[in-house]
Image (cartoon, rainbow, N blue to C red; front, side):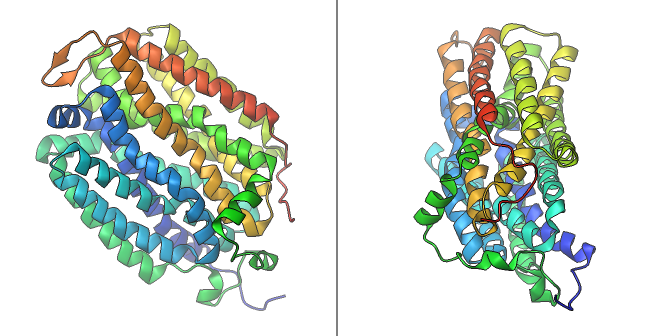
Length: 427
């Protein structure tokens, strides 16, 4: 038994919080195209599918980075990953801000997505070292909450700044803030409380397999049934929120309901806030119940009902807002999935398993944002205003039907998962 004390709560949350700030910036960058979609479509003269693809370049890199990020988090630690990721994100934002062609804008988005991809897995890695196991679900829920705060900044505040200064100068300021964060992370974040002279919460038995290859680590975690189930299941539920809140919600609300950009951004931000609130609530409830599966399934069922309703009914605006809030809250079952996933593998595979699991929701954005744009283009009637394509309500409903199908798959997979009863697999 170590005589060293456990780390102070304030220090633990400060270390974790600096990593969370990079995740906040990453989420802000993730949803930013929604409120500047009209500027991007007009400036680069692109279709809905092309806009979806430009936004999705963030997700392409993010998803590809998740498995190596998990292995590197296990091998090198969170500090180096977070500082390097923040520095590269700043560079990518500069490239995006100065882009003169669609290709350069896409490259900037690709670099941003690949670099901020280290944030979430690194936060989970820090949580296993700096917090007691019973606090992991809370930390995961708070991670989503912090991310959604970034999403809110990417809504009305970003729109107001873009209206005042233009999207390129705002992106340059974002790059400067991210660069400063890189320096602060390097100075203050440590991988383990022992580096500050405190006792770690991380199991000592977890140190044995840190130098496995990336392929070996991937094969090891995928041998656990819940891991691949919880990889695919979020594509529909979380992907729906990322597709609506991260890109197509603002054009939908502006074109179908005639709202101004700031009001539309406020509504999409509200759906993201509901997601942020649903995560910690559902995570805490599952911990209290001592079970993960029932609430994970419930979230899929509620989300399925909400998006199916949008696919088949043109709702009045107040009813639409209510449905979006409920759908966002239900998508908080994502947090249950992260705890569920972590408990399904031995501790030494936690970083890799978290990386694999985190691919799911981002794959949702990667797949659904361009597909939704493609569906819109299929139903486009040729109307253009100020260089921006205008789509009828039927086009958006066809996109929501696509989302509903993906969520139905999420529900089926959730039903096939194996309950962990909130207990860690110790290998």
